[in-house]
Image 1 (spheres, rainbow, N blue to C red):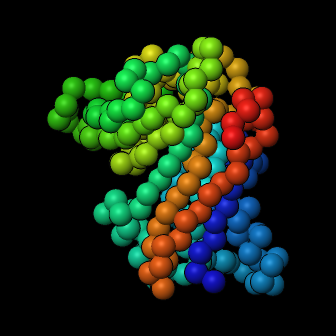
Image 2: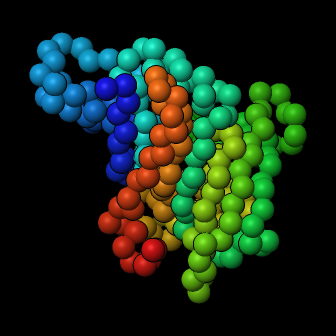
Length: 213
């Protein structure tokens, strides 16, 4: 009764949809209205977000108390967030931590890498390991240590390993829908029972050709 987990499809923003379009928040609220026969406004606290072309697990809180407690976990980085990505090339080493400084580029709606401690820039950290290599691509598992805007996309692209289909960050290859970045797994403490809650999102059909098991 306190949480709502959704396997987000590509093409839907978490919130702030353009006129005439839907967001995940709007779809989720409508689902709750119909399921629980709730007229009027439905509370839904946003505790995690995904970029519009990204798929995978999204977590919402159904009460303000749960939202506050979960937001604190994300702020204090006690959650665990695991992503899968198909990228160009074969990163070396096969397992590493990437540390960069990112700054928002509002004009182009992206994030850019800048020199450490640049004004308004924020440190971005992630760890990756290769799960599988294809002739010209690699399947990566990524542990996100910070949650900066477009962090995974910008950090991998800067090293010549753009995510498949991610034209904003330099990919010249097509992907069936969205980009090949999937929020595979999220682990939090339940905001009431404080027991571990592990959430896994199945891969969308757009990944079928890659034989990911």
